[in-house]
Image (cartoon, rainbow, N blue to C red; front, side):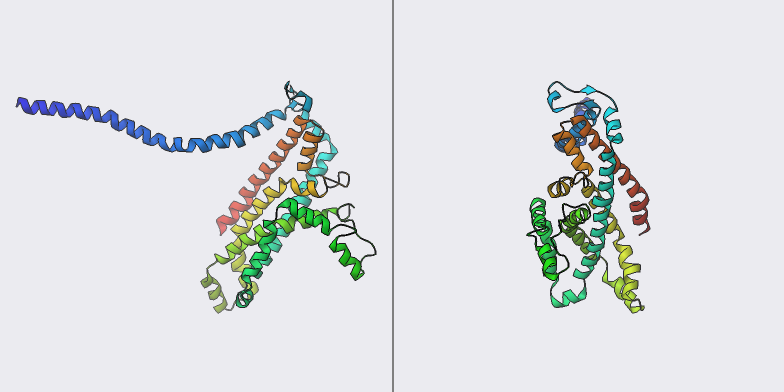
Length: 324
């Protein structure tokens, strides 16, 4: 009897020792995912959130190039009042929203859909030209933007450009057109460059959506007597709507924040005619050396895009995807 009680006592002691060990193991297991995510969180904070917070705080200060070491003076909303009262800001916002963003995004979506339908057509598959067409469409996307802009500036040159030489040889014009210099044609040139360079992303995305549509649905519609127009309108387009809405959202954000195309093409000229918010930010911060006001332009750009993304996701993207 005494031996049994001793053995039971030793077992209880061992169990009491195991319980803290098990609790420690559970605690470590619960902490392990957070420890694994810690490097990524630190990376995001150092390279994304910290610069954004610094830019936000800088927008409330008067800081010039010569005052960086001393630190800026806190002026509250003074920078925002100054840029909102500047007529150039309204012009830059209009150019950014309507010409650079809406104009190029709509053209890319329409052309991308048509060209993706062409690549996915049975005629090209029958002639074995699908691979060649895909390669041709991907080539502009593989060219760096700087090289693409330089090539287009040469093509649109009023004296030596290929486009003007063709127009002169046909007799459509009497002298070369300075596409990127005069106000009547400069935005057409910029839009052409942006659409040509960024169109392949839309084509590839829409083509992937087309190939994901089950062939049985289209065959069943054909058996029921549906024409190609009816198939496109009532089957293809609704099933492609999530892809088109996502691509439209992404291209809008990328184009709205783009700085390279306008700056390398026209530098905001002639005069300030093609100035966009990105180039205005660069001119204010790094040419006029007004870092605080430049940061305020960046905060204004962010605010406009946050409002657009919220409305787009709430009323358009979420509703259409939910219906499909």
